[in-house]
Amino acid sequence: MIKEALVGNIAFSKSDAIVQGIAANEDFHSGVAQAVSRRHPGIIEDFAQHCAAGAPEPGSLWAWRNGAGPRVLSLFIREAAADHSGKARLEWVEQALIQLRAFIEQEGLRRVALPRLGTGAGELDWRDVKPLIEKHLGDLPAKVYLYTIFNPHIEGVED
Image (cartoon, rainbow, N blue to C red; front, side):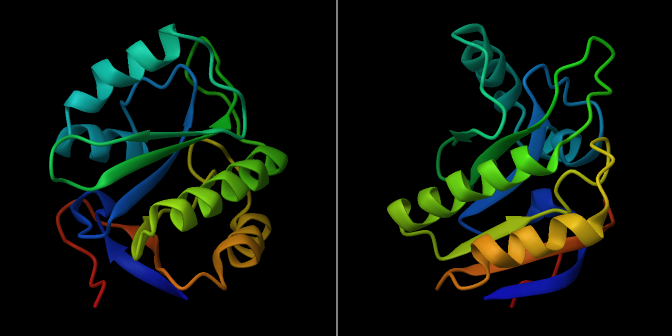
């Protein structure tokens, strides 16, 4: 079940997992990655170690957790660019959503928060991304909270 049009800061989500779309050389200085890293600063060092161990493949997923907080599920949907302006690709979004679905099912997650994947720095059109999210996550028994409007100061109402 997808609940769309949540307004708020996804980093404040009370879900089992927070999803973000990133590049293999993410600098955590903008968008959802920045909001998540401010709330969970340990992710930056662990991410660097993960990437140093081997370049993540486009369309893959990296799961991170710090203590009892939510998992942060990073979907590699943007190309790595020296200036951190790498664009997303729909085929990578689709591959990552397949990985995300498998992770949700395998881990038995009940609530997952997603942003508008690939539409910020990735420059994808939401009209192309949203149907992929519906296709791959729409029939899950887990609640999928889709944050569509970012407000850094408030929590989204996830019911």
